[in-house]
Amino acid sequence: MVAVALVSRIMYPRMYSVATGNSGVATTSLPAAIPQFVLPALSLATIDPPADPTSGPANPPAPSVKGSDDQNANAGAVTGGSPAAPAVTPNASTIFVAPQGPVANSTFSHVGAGAPPALAAEAALVADLTTGARFMGQNASERWPLASVTKLMTATVVLDKMSPAQKITITQDAFNVDPSEKNLHVGDTYTTGDLLRFLLLPSSNVAAEALADAYGRTGFIAEMNARATAWGMANTHYADPSGLAVGSQSTANDLVLLAQKIYSDYPDILTITRTSPVTVTEIGSGDQVVVKSINEFAGETDFIGGKTGYTDQANGNLLSIFSYEGHPIVVVMLGTDDGTRFANTETLYNWFTANFR
Image (cartoon, rainbow, N blue to C red; front, side, top):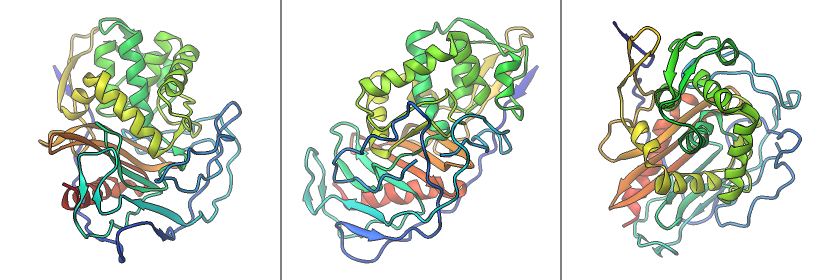
């Protein structure tokens, strides 16, 4: 018997709207009120963002999350964190663009005259993972809830700390984090390696919890935060393994550091996220289950890998790595309307490839 795991691929229209004015530092106002977020106790709320040309205003942090993750549009409430804070009008958006000519710490030059695109995002960044050079940033040091982009760090812990052949059975506790889960069921048994595919392709919150519980949830989250510290992600905090908790937060700048580490040391994560579908085996029944990606870029020739994210509080997030002239180029989008995260990513990436050689 073959079961097919969730995922319809929805194509969004391409967006090519650009801001007026010359390249360089520009300031624009965001179009709507966006809630600010407060990290829970023991968080990084008191840490100032690093001085960086892509730095934007760091919103003071928030609320516990009620919302949905990528895989399920109606995930239940997640407890934890602070009481909900009212929405506020954000500070003006700060945009950095690399100046014309050779880009510092890069083999690329800014040769085009096109203005950076107007992005419907709370924060955005495009950078070269080989050198760390930033080409365009919008509020790149602003902390924002990660949603399921959290699962990239979750995957690094799984790969280092757990055997891929370990058998894990889905418990009621793991299932309770997301009762709308359609692919995994209480009592199902999979190997760690196969649960990693559920984690990264349809973005299963239950898989994230099952993996963390099998290791020891408290120790697992502590390991996630220890890695963030060791890798220089000073404005990142993980509160859970799935990203449903609003306390799991980072910045576009920190996510570039994470993407660099994954690109250099965890190629299996990128291989999984760019490949769809895959077939896994539910051990108890022997059923073959086809697991598909919800990432629209999966399977495209220049897509190296990445991760989607969505909750009601975070809105749409997306980290994508593309191959351009032999370099891994990362595009980070945080706080977009869920239906525009792919279009915004494509718009920014197309602007980069048209203006940098």
